[in-house]
Length: 364
Image 1: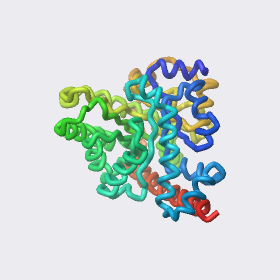
Image 2: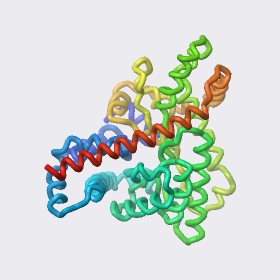
Image 3: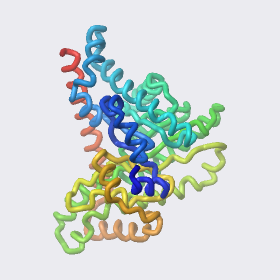
């Protein structure tokens, strides 16, 4: 057992693994991460599944059976991915039970091609919820403008949701509003609110990648001094917004309602000049989730130093960073708008790669 990761967990951070494959399930690797790395949840996305399916061998038997049954390409993708998520849910069920549903979660995303379509997103969220058929699944819906009403609708039906692709604090506030509206609808329908859980996936490292590029183009000493600071500052201020929102009378009026926890996504460090645990060490606070790719999880197990809450004592510093970015000419709203567009496009490309891998497997 990694003491570093035990310390991180003790500081209030739920450690989720941003990776899943059939091989990790069947080999026992996922269970070892639970036992030895304090992992209490799993997230997936189209890129992760595309990588898993491209390896082929672990899915050959299922793909052969689906081909013989005449399954369509889309149906084969759903069958393969939901089987993996269901099995991972079963492995994590003891964690789910022990934490009253807060952890032990596995996320699966609606087709990213539906990111700008509300009603089809709702329909697929319902279908995935029923197909996986496990209480510890989270259905991922992107925080696009069209995704917000879909989030409210499915939360209102008692479906637990991982809201993904959040980059800006303004959009994050809209996500929390969508969640709360869903809880109010569920309460009006007589649904037990304690059974509904949600996380809001706030993306981190991609912020620095884009902002640093703009700072280097500006080139002044003041601009260059801000490199590597925007992502942490943005996330810290998001956590402040989370604390404020869920301390509201409107939320507290809902009996048994759970806070929609902030989840730090995209926490692998992309710039080799920065610490490989930067987006773990600097974003520690009670009640958050950090979903880490495997390399970040291993780096954290090896040399992460946990010193307690690194968010709330540094909120003024975060405000200073954001003010500094504006002062040197970085349009942060433009940054987050661009990152949302690119993220949707990247997941659409990954989905096409996933379809191509499954098509090859079906034809094999």
